[in-house]
Image (cartoon, rainbow, N blue to C red; front, side, top):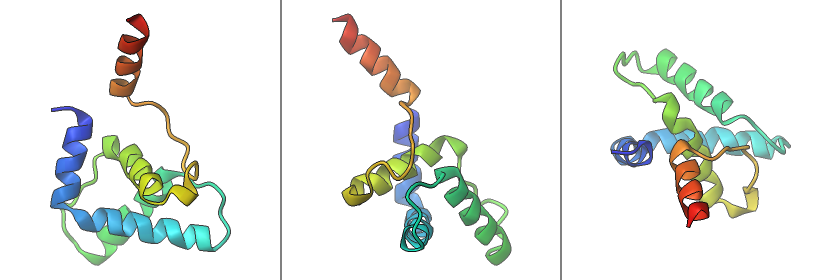
Length: 101
């Protein structure tokens, strides 16, 4: 399974993570932020979860963070570019394969 597929499985099983991601991102946008680190948003979610839930099994894989940023910008196209993202390893491979043709 690719990291992207793992992300979607996690997202479907834990939709509240995206809701929190969107909530904290919108707070920053409404306060005037033009750009923000998606790692910062996940850091806040991790902090809030650790303080409020006491759930030792609640973990957000670092490999999923960029996918949350991409999902937010896809669902909120007016904020495209709010998060700076790089191509994933899979996207790089696909691009190289397409260029080799």
